[in-house]
Image (cartoon, rainbow, N blue to C red; front, side, top):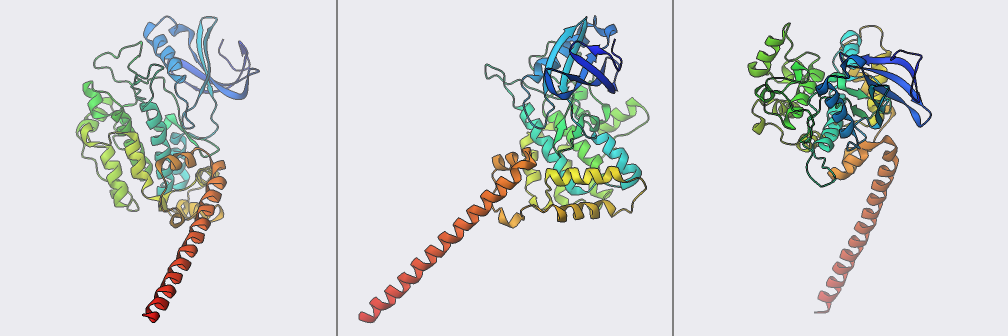
Length: 386
């Protein structure tokens, strides 16, 4: 029923992209949708389990509100021959989990600028999800609950995509969480969630764990048994990332450790706060084009590289794809920065507009200088007459 080479309604099924205990995901095509899709289908044997079906339906309902370049969109939801399905945007590119494995095997630690760009884009996507409202203007209260390397894709355009809202919690969820039941990967679960407290700050904790692991190349709360993982999440002292990677600057240490505050009131309160903190250090920012260029380089490596090779490769990519120098951008509003991140295609327009503004400033400066010189000459002439 769900195999490769078969049809499912209007969809022609290709290779399997992934499978879990309750659903499978295949690459598929449909005449009604121009782009290839990731077709997620519940296994027939779980169709009668009310909670699982409820979660699946909630995911589809939630998708209609999620309209952001950093979140994979949904094209269609339905039920066919007793099987529930969702057709998602297919995002070509590796997951962060795949990138981590490739770097561990052949590249070494991921450059700081690459981690910062990935985190910035994820903050932007989470900020969108956390602040969504329904048609009546009421907050949806979305919490992803599963922000982890396997649910983040670096697309072949350099746009980072957050996927799989299948465990997302909203105020309108049809399935209520059972007390003591943790949903999500234990290594990325926030401490307060272990005690039944759940809000958007749990996602920021998970993002802090992801950043720590990308910066250091090491798992943070890894342990051989689930109970030990949870013990470490609750109480293990968290060292700054710079202890494992001396290249991490103090401000990034502080940013990650703030995301990993066990008291959620001391943590970043909003994804936008964390995004703004990341944006303060523009000198370490890279473009989406540079990001995808480095990821392509990383996956082209088949033998272990010297430790500095990853940073050297990024430097070479930046030199070959230069962006506008920071000093020419004295004041960038958050809105414009968000717009700039949406697409590399916007960069030429942004650069041209900024350059034009600089030219106009020089013209005004010249005009003001002429006025001042004229005033001085007139004043000297008037004094000579007295």
